[in-house]
Length: 509
Picture 1: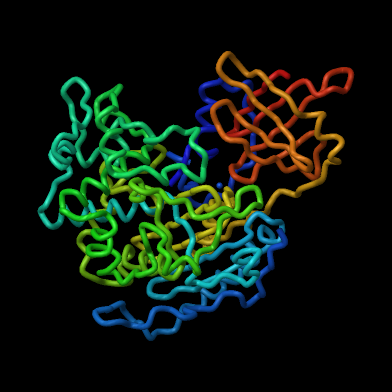
Picture 2 (picture 1 turned 180 degrees about the horizontal axis):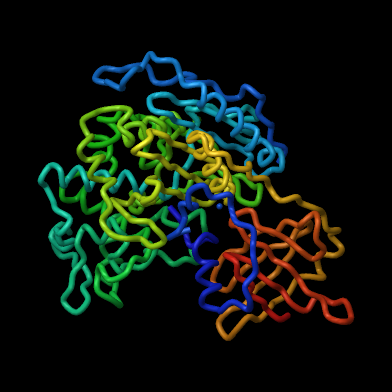
């Protein structure tokens, strides 16, 4: 689930403010576009050269598992790509960007697992393919699959009105007589707000107390400012609502529906809508600004971003998506990948999956405080990558893209982390202050004992890291952006400049 956190909202801020002038900013090494077009987050142990193991502990064939050629040896290209990916990821681990991370590289029925870093300060061992991470908005793809399955069963259609599935007495909003249909909820075109809670809610309690009754009450109080279906605007609330109304219509709760119809039939016991006590020991705590954070319980909005899973489970999930494994949900899976409307820039949106049209790849990313996730697969070439991390960092995009390119045999340079320097604590006050961009936008630069933080109006503060090769220049780890400072004739800092998406926005101190 992507909270109002740096991914999209910084870009929106730039658009709203207006760019001062364009610059050629560095971009991730994108073999495929970073799957964040609509949303979008010390002392790690570097992996050994043989940290990954081909098919290590891979799922044994189980009853009803008819994946093809289960006993065939893995292709040599898989081990080669794994070695190159390990070499590419290691510098990011050593630099502290990825305190813990797990990957799965998939070629057909074969999977190669890679694990990096340390589970936590209290558990300084390397994670395993069974370690659990919060997968954020990748959860939405499971809710989309539940809808596709319900359509296959003949229970609902994409045109089924939301109002028809709500509890008695709960009213869905309309716009000039036009109502919300299930298709709108799964394609982010419902016109519902991005979130159903105040974005200023403290992170630990974000959706934790948001019950089903709270969801119904919130929905009844929403006013739409446009017709459903008119525009694509990402909505966590819309997908959370979709999952809950599907469960309500089936006369059960969401977790039970998910187990009975998806994770049970696909044999994904470690993919959970809510982290429970039986699985807590396998959970890798997230990190925000290098501080460990607990699992974020999303309560009624779990269908949009509350899931936890492992690379082993997600690799199996992607193999069902590519057809390398076959099972009872094959028709629903095919349906769930079917594009329903354009999403701009050569992309489409399906049942909560995003689809790049040429070459064809299907993907979704996700983040919650302390975790960032990226999954992508090619239905036509049976390739896939799962990347689960215990850190909010944009590194998931260039590294996932690099892994996919190498699996496909495409030569691309390995992405490298920016070199980081050091600023004497006594100099940090040079930069602190409020910088005015326009009537409704300001930059706020604050300091702790050892570092600076940067905040846009209406957003959360993000740590800045000094560039090693430029004076008065800093970069972010959560999103691909830089912040530079300019001095006046007397040498005092007078302006702060945000560089992102090829744009440059300046604020005056």
